[in-house]
Length: 159
Image (cartoon, rainbow, N blue to C red):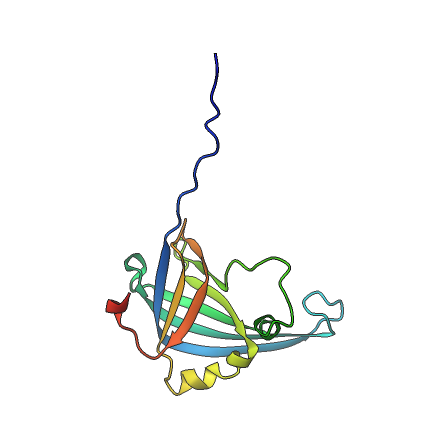
């Protein structure tokens, strides 16, 4: 009797999805620490810069009206990657992460420190009212974010 090898199962194609949030509130966060054992940074100091944004999900439909906590972390090394001065050992899979499991509704993203320094001012004067994100559709309540942008306007018909 000959048994044919059926091979590996084909992977399902992952749909991509637009995630849109309306900014409701925001607050900056900063802390500085000594890191003498260099666990978090290459020098004796380590700083944590973040902007925490509370938003309302507008899209996709299954997340609509959920209150979402978004944390945008400042990353100093992004400038070197963007300018080509430094290379990743492995290609990055995303710029952030979405988690909508159970009662949790959170987003964590990193952004270049030079833009991070301008972001509070632009939020304060109301230039950004929406955040659009793009990435694979949620799988078990989680997904990577492959791109995001801050916007002044949102037109749901453009999706």
